[in-house]
Image 1 (tube, one colour):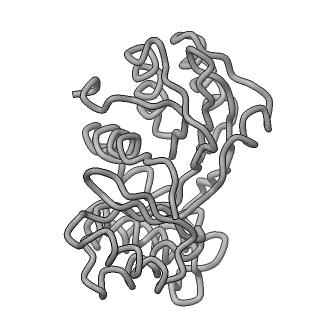
Image 2 (image 1 turned 30 degrees about the vertical axis):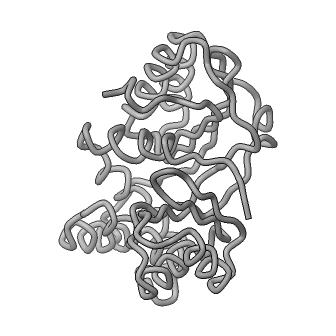
Length: 242
């Protein structure tokens, strides 16, 4: 098993971008709302809600916030209906972008996303213009507390699709619908999980000539409460965003 490490991108996207701005809980709350309205408030029978709750707990979202979001979404008083809209485009230096949003106002969100692309040398494209460059995968990042051989055997045991051995971590790729269950299996076997998520993983990566401008575009997109996830195919030195 082999592949390309994307841990530096995960560290940027998952670590600083949302948490430092304090809007992560708001975004997860929207995901809970959509999940409840699609499949009901019971996580036992609603796998999407179960996964969002796991994501919320990974982000240290208080149980009170989680339960309140579920109750609000399942009540008649919740008149806000969020719609899933995905935008695709190119950033500076031809970097491919996929922007996933949950919005109650398509015009507002489209305007915000387009403005961010235009401001930082990118362009919003048509649906499908870059989507073929990415694959949706479950990604589990594991601390290097065991040997490469032991982790490879463990990855085979849980029937992972792929494993990348990086200098700092192991990256385990699994079916998106299994990411939280597989992470739990790894934890029970003694692995230390640093991150688990469903990501759009690019087939190939590019090195941008102006990474500072690219980071400004990423941050501008993630500043929007409507934007849930920003995926791209650029190699970025995480030290640039310190």
